[in-house]
Image 1 (spheres, rainbow, N blue to C red):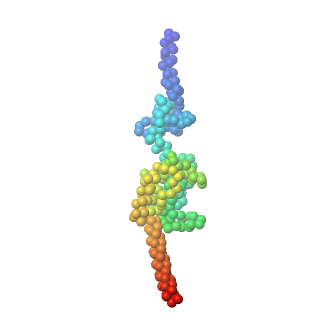
Image 2 (cartoon, rainbow, N blue to C red):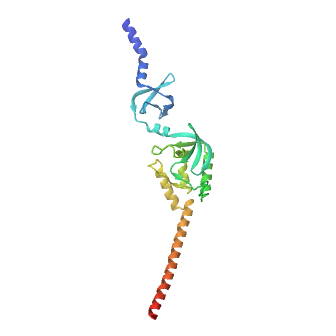
Image 3 (cartoon, rainbow, N blue to C red):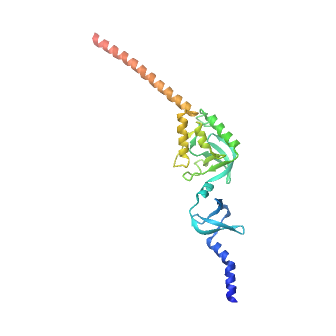
Amino acid sequence: MKKYMVVSMLLFFMPCLVFASSGSVKTSTVIKCDGILYGAHGNPKHYHVVEEKNGKYYAVGEKIERPSCVLEQETKEIVTLVSCVDGDTATFQTQDGSYKTRFLAVDTPETKHPTKGVQPFGKEASDYTCNALKKAEKIELEYDENSDKYDKYDRLLAWVFVDGRLLQQELIQKGLGEVAYLYDDYKYTPLLEEAQKKAKEEKVGKWQEESKKVSSASWLDRAIQSIQGFFAKIVNNITGFLENVI
């Protein structure tokens, strides 16, 4: 009888012992992807497949490397637009509060700079960004693992997706911005660089102005060289004449 009671108690408590030995996982860390529940706990943080029991989540089996689908969900979040600022900055409502956000790896012409004023294509870039954000059904921020999350002005640094389209890439494709502020190997830099190369070749947007500047500079250089050559000939002729007379 005593043996039967011990076995019964072990069978009753076994599930609890299994889950306890694996460890509980906070609900806030649980992510479902590819049909599987994953969660994280511990210090340093590590990942497990998890199971739900009575409204709580418990780690199952050995710790695993962070699945790629988990990484994507952890580094992305859906946000809402609070206000537009300019071509490469906007304020979003995130899960942690309202943050002014600087678009990663792109620089658009200024519209509100205290000394530079409104630069060519600055208004076009600002209007394009604001219209894209206001019309978007879904805005996502993606934080790059190789970038700081905040800059020295406490602005979020992020890739901005508008209905699945990378906004930085669109700005550069239309010649409304250029690749800038690369302090590491960021995830989408190759896409931006390819878009910029094509925009330059096709002289789109701001690259029209850059092309005109180069053409003007080339014309001025040729004019200066021509004038210098003209006066050099005159000086040589005068020098030759004086030598013959003397």
